[in-house]
Length: 492
Image (cartoon, rainbow, N blue to C red):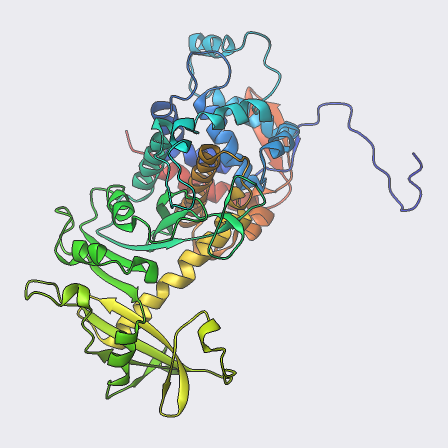
């Protein structure tokens, strides 16, 4: 066709050029190898039976690479397949360290000549289908919250993530865990309506604040309340922590305001960690409002020495659930108030999404916190507020920067597996930023990392029996990062 409108034209490259648009992506394969992620997948996952065709490791790593490269659907794997240079690198990595005999076994993995480097969408969908359990679906009751029990493959994916977390965190004595749910809006007819009145799924995540890792996640339907069975999930998350962790802190929004969870933490229900200190959003009930109204002293809440416009007080509130016996645990209840900038129209008070109170001829927005921590109220509130920023930022990355926001199927188990693989990609990228890239890279968003590192153009060439990736810029960053990755490898 004529291409005369602009002073250039497009032509198809007929020969193999070795060009890649992903010259920085092999670094993630280096890191995955050093952290033992590849070995963990090969050891833990047994979805594929026999030695023919694609392996568990190849499928899962392909989906992890898909997330990191910016794909958000199974079909996007075909875009990776068209990157000739990266495919050459990936094939070379697959054969790394294998003897000639094992290479021949690898080649006999295919009944016919292998034509693709990445699995096509069809085998990926078949693979994901193995994570779906039709028998669990039969247990659903209309209108009731239900969480299908994970099958052995989903449980093994959780174990792979645990292995990755343990490899990333070599020495840590404390863990602050932030628990929160996030909604994934979808148009799939099999999805259920959430409290926001649209079809969605609602995974419940446990964020390890100090390490910036997703320690645990549970994929859920949109109609399952965020705090549903939170104590069980918390126990599962505690089981994922590395052996060196001795002290645990918990933060949660009001979904975690459940007295069985509070008692479990206060009464040292977990023998390994003992008493777990927490700060959790408290329900602002009429009784709580009464205690707030009786508070005598309100103090300004400061941030970095400056007033925030909010005030706080410690109340004498004792909920009925723990006020029956001297043996019941005692908690501290704090309240914050913030004056509303605009008056509320008469009759509209009940339609607000947050509780309010009239005090001193002003209407305030009220928020409650329950804690068992012995620290100053203003320090505790600031510590509690830290949970919202980072964990919500992680949710945004999972849904928008990675492929968690676009689920591949109408089947619950397939979507749960897709979400778990995205979590592996998230944690691998977090490890890359903090352990290998370091410096200013630790705070960069995924968009900046793709632009500056992953999507570097390069040419893959064979030279002196070695595969070489030639790049025109950022060579120092790549070499320095690779050196740090090599230093992470276990000695001996």
